[in-house]
Structures are given as structure tokens and as C-alpha cells.
Length: 114
Image (cartoon, rainbow, N blue to C red; front, side, top):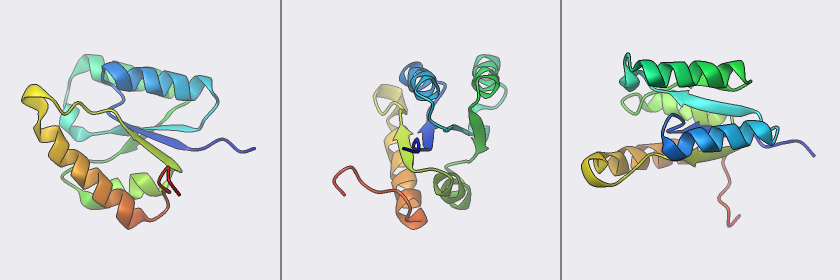
């Protein structure tokens, strides 16, 4: 059986990095959204490069660019969002709504209830 292609959004966070590693370990073609918003945060850039070295595909996309999110989603079968939505990052909940809109527009992701 063919493995699902997985996109991880928030792959450099506490949970996200573990999801990326687990997805790769299970042999899934793994894509990690690389957002320009991370800027020059060296730790995150190094982590992304280490994922790439282990076989992940980095996909550029931004919550400020709806089309880039749709294009990223079209590359995969499964989207896992691990962005925090608590405390000072509560604006991330609004960003996650943008991701849901991109998933709906892409039309290729099935819900777990489908």
C-alpha cells in the first residue's frame, strides 16, 4: 500500500518536530511548510535543513499568501497542523482558519470522517 504524503505545518515547534520525525520514520513522503515569517531564526532554519537531509521536502508557503498555501496542500494527502493556539500565540488560531480555507479550496484532502 502506498504511504500517504504528509504536510506538517508548524514543523519546527515542540510537537511539530516530533511529528516530522515520526512521519519520516514511518516512511511517509513528508513535506514541511517553510514560512518566510520565521525570518532568520537560525535554530528553525537549521532544523528545517536537518529535516531536508533526512528526506523531507521543504515547501514554501505563507499565511499571507493564500495561493501558496493551496499549492502546498495540493502536493499531499494529509495535512497536520501543530501550531500553538494558546497565550500570546492566540493569533495562530486565525492563521489556522486560513489553512482550513486552503484545504477546502485545494479539494484533495479528505476528512477523517470521509
